[in-house]
Image: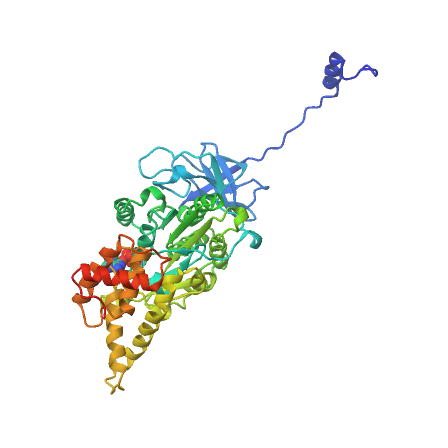
Length: 497
Ligand SMILES: Nc1ncnc2c1ncn2[C@@H]1O[C@H](COP(=O)(O)OP(=O)(O)O)[C@@H](O)[C@H]1O
Ligand SMILES: [Mg+2]
């Protein structure tokens, strides 16, 4: 090699390189599929595998490393089992699990890996997001101060939700949990809120009905539905809420408001338990693995309201949890109650008596939503809530047939009237103007002389009139009182005294 111009003397360089060349082994790890079943693959080899990494088999299918044993690795299969047999080679890809995100997913039904389930083409996307990320740091967060309107009379007036809040919907099977969540999605129509509905382990018929309901209410095109059906593997069921969260996160970080519903986290916990048992992890309380609390906490911690310098986006979460015989002290419900900012409790006894939605207001709470409630509604709802709570307390006594003091009778009558007013059909969310209209009418005594069906009829006429808008939410109380009196008069109902 010339010492003067080593870099220019390429012929010499090449011969030097050849002279120095020593054949070497390049180390590349190849694992071997040892066993497969229930959506789990057991792999031998791959000593440098780490948790949450993706590995690929020779036929191209992939799996997520989920358990590191001393001899074998347990991995969740992300595709079909067919075509894979023991002995297949596997190698690490160095990737982590992520899915495509963005507006291409609006109006779509996808599985937890982002593959279409609605017969349409693969959703278009330009970005991918990790299923598992850290939640936004405190410094990136803002206080919850804008309302997320659910359209439910009971929720918006007495247990208000704010954007970025995590509000648990809890109750036995068949008490209307999913219906309430779906109505909240429907209420977002025209409100510039995008929705992600995660359905975990539901029967195909229920999934189809849900999607059809959203489509008919014309909110499917502002939503993405993530489905892990009952018949799918526990691995995919486990991944579903994280996939939904990643989709919601993308919109939140781009400055949008998002509502995400996890329906439900009881079945999610069950899928995780199944997965853990298949992977032979030790069970903890009530046979759930100990880290289920941590998992749910991490998931819900990702819902928040971002500060202005991060675009002011928000992710409101409505996790659903199913109880058995009203047992809210079981492991998963208590976990979720402690992780969330409040809960809406649905009572099967109310459901049985036809008080729908079957919300038990005495056991429901919203810890932060009050700060985000629309001031006009907050002002009108205060007395109504007090009336209703007093009534619920007194009602217990009347059941014992005890003699009532004077004045109590009137309170009971007001309570019965309220119970009638608070009933609400499915798929009929109210606008904030409609909420204000019925509250003002109630506070002005417009329903006092009525009972039962007559209350419903007058309420329906009033809400119909108020649907057009009225004096606006910023208008004073007098303007609203006049508007309500006018509407009642037009509808043939005498104006309030
Ligand atoms: N506000 C309501 N008015 C009338 N029917 C309702 C209402 N809420 C729920 N339902 C009905 O109650 C049943 C159970 O509701 P669902 O939301 O599936 O309960 P869950 O999710 O708690 O199991 C459904 O048939 C639903 O149509
Ligand atoms: Mg349900």
